[in-house]
Image 1: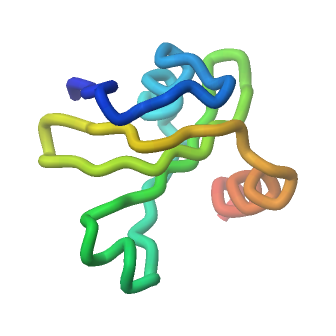
Image 2: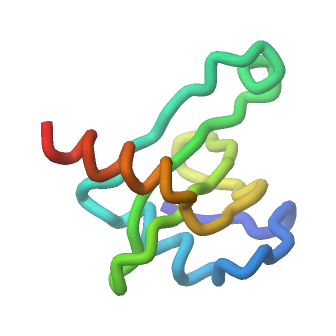
Length: 88
């Protein structure tokens, strides 16, 4: 998978951490149910870095190219959802 960083403005999460979160075998991607996101072809990814930091990423994808729009570390609630989802 290749990344396009042209839209990404760093919010404290490095590009390497974002790429690692996509490689996390327990990561998952969601399709937002809001109309705004469905018309703009945006997706959400929750995954962890190699150091265990949770990363929340909004991105668009063509299947081969991932264009990262925004990324930040997971909130407490997102980390809880991530952990609970992976226990199932």
